[in-house]
Amino acid sequence: MDYHHGLLKRSTARFILCCTAILAPAFLFATQKPTTESTQGTFSGDYVIYRDYSWKSPTWIGFLYYNDETYGAFIRTDDPENPHTVSIIFSTQIEKGQLVLTGQQIISSITSDDTFGVNYLMGLLPKLYELKTFPRAGKAPFGTATVRKQMEEFGGSVTLDFQSFVPLFHLKAITGAKKETVLELTEIGSINGNGESVFYGYDPVEPQQDTNVFTLNKAAKKETVTVSGTRLHLDSQWKKIADNSFLCGNTAFLTVSTVNVPQEESGNKLSGPEQLLRLLTASSPYAKTLLPYTTIEGKQTAFTLKQSVYDVESKKISKDIKRCIKNKDGSFTIVSLTVNSHAYSAEQAYFNGLF
Image 1 (spheres, helix red, strand yellow):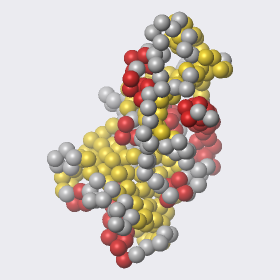
Image 2 (image 1 turned 90 degrees about the vertical axis):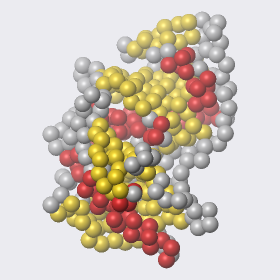
Image 3 (image 1 turned 90 degrees about the horizontal axis):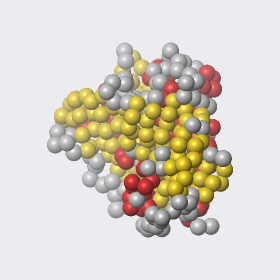
Image 4 (image 1 turned 45 degrees about the vertical axis):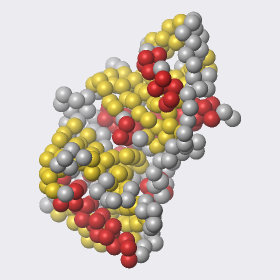
């Protein structure tokens, strides 16, 4: 099967699964016992993974929330001479708003060379917990906050950028005194339904070289189609494959769906749109959302999400654009476009003008 047809097929499945998953949190939230973190939108199984630029060799660290008494963590260092990953489960307790480590279990192989990495995680986890900030929506469409602190782990004076939809610490990035990035969020997700290997078995993306296979036909006959009240500005290059879905050769897939989001709860600070945003930006074992390239424009009632998505099987990157519009009944209409990244770069005006 042609790569792009395969990618679009998997993108369709991923979007359907995501829409289905939007219904799941209401059930999960109801069945989980109350926890300190759930009041700030973090639930059992949520994880975050960061690229840590404070190390000489390419390094990634991750933190996984099981419950208030248990956290998982790993550090992966791709040293050409000694690549290694160490995974740990920490026993914890919360005392006066601080996260205290009460024990640890190393669940991976380990050598004496890994001692520094273990100690690094033991110091960093409580520190990030201490500094976590849950921002509320202001001028930005979703909650953001910037805080300046001292962190010796990253050379002293740093700036921490927070976003509400990010689980655990709500931390998106840390920059140093010279405005250099020292810690950057690369992935969020959940082990629920995906297994722990999606976290502990993390592999950095290694995209293969791709080419633009799309040639814009400026003479193509224009056609405006309305789906779920949304006007799509298509042309004869697009083929209708379902009442709500269209295909543009081997290059792009466009679909419109209406989904429900969990009702906002008094014990959960995440708004419905913020819960939706987290689900749409979460990675899975099959597709990785490259968060450093994610942008959000608009407001909580109507926003556009632009992302680069790495397909694990093909090792190719596609551009994913979603226009999310809140309806009067609280549901969201989502217009979703998946397009070859090179084609999008070459014809941005055309693809941006589809809806």
